[in-house]
Length: 159
Image 1 (cartoon, rainbow, N blue to C red):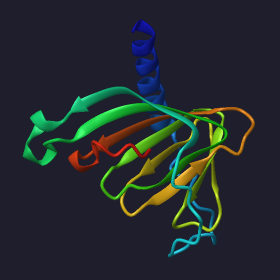
Image 2 (cartoon, rainbow, N blue to C red):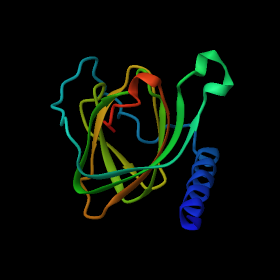
Image 3 (cartoon, rainbow, N blue to C red):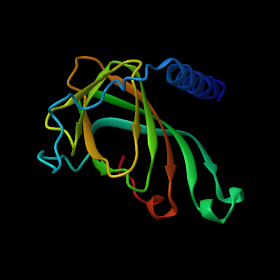
Image 4 (tube, one colour):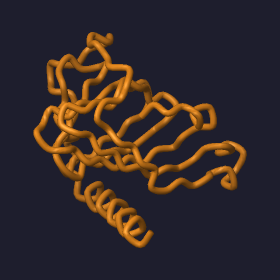
């Protein structure tokens, strides 16, 4: 349990430090000239070679009626080489992702090419974003995800 708490403290500290030092140019965005207005990619529908562990969850219901049933979660995802986080949307589940080890490629519905996210990269996921991720590297990619899970998704086990 002490190790779990230490990992959580480390992840939160690293997320805060990385976000605070991030440059205003958004690393990991779709390259200029590669944006798309329609989804042009095939999408995997099942996870492959990925573990998704909830490290902490907070019920936000006490914060008011607007938050009733929402959960603030911190998760650790480990994506093995060749592993996939399947296609999913963020219109009702905003998240911040921190890559702490390895690298991972994101395939967005709004980009014609994959977007590489190396260790230290932080990406915000919200609004009309739909995407999937693949570890095209030779080592596991370790990600921390902080998201707000709405009540309608509590039983949804997609990434």
